[in-house]
Every structure is written in C-alpha cells, then in structure tokens.
Image (tube, rainbow, N blue to C red; front, side, top):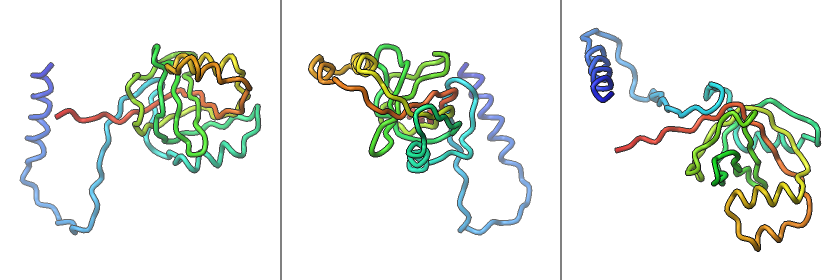
Length: 171
C-alpha cells in the first residue's frame, strides 16, 4: 500500500514539474485550499453549506411536524459512547440531536470538538423523559444527572443521511 501511495505521489510530482510558461498571477490572489473529508453515509459535498446561525434561524421557524432538507456545519458536542449511533451538535443557545438515517452508519466516538458538515432533515420534536434518560445513559452521564431528568422537552432534531468530517493530517 505504501508503494502505491509513493508511486501516486511521485507521478503527481513529475506531472507538476512541467516546464510550461504561463502568465504570472498577482500575489494578492488567495490560494484555494482543498480539505479532505471522511465521508459517512451518502456521498455529499462541502458546497452550499449553511452556518450554525443560519441553521438556528431555520430551526426557530419550525413547528413540531415540520421538516426541512438542509446541509449545515456545526461543532460536535458529544457522541454516543456505546457505538456512535447519535451525536449532539452545538447550536449556540441549544444543541441539536443528530441520528442517522435507518441506523445505516455510525460516527467515530472521539470527534467531540470537531467542526463537521451534516446533510439531511431538520425538525423539532418533544422528547420524552424516557428517551432523554436513554440518551443521557448512552452519553455516559452519571446516575444523578439521569435521575434529574423529569420532564419532556422541545428538542432540535436532525436525521442525517450524510456526514463529512475533515481529515486530520498526521505528522
């Protein structure tokens, strides 16, 4: 595998060293930086992505039963520590609970704090005490924290069909 990667890199280096004359570009032009992503679920792109604040505006306009198809970026707050079957995204004043379409894929359990892109359906729901306690247990909350959950709450929900996580370069 290492030999293949080496040959691939070598071929790009050779092709990039052609002695073609081209017009010089001004130094003030910004370079495009390509980001490599790990893809989970359906293949999606990093184009036309809403910010966290734009997404919050959409959530505020939703009523229970409404859905909206959207792609947005946010920071992962926490991930199910049993098998990565859900995650919470920081949305500012609230967090959004993300589940994955048909449990077709799962997230790595160590991505808390990373900025990711999710694509799918956003909606609001009334989460029961039982479901809140279940997710709190999966998230590794203490017995006291779980017992303190006593009332249903309006939550921001998201069913992701695709997720992009930026790849971290290893040195």
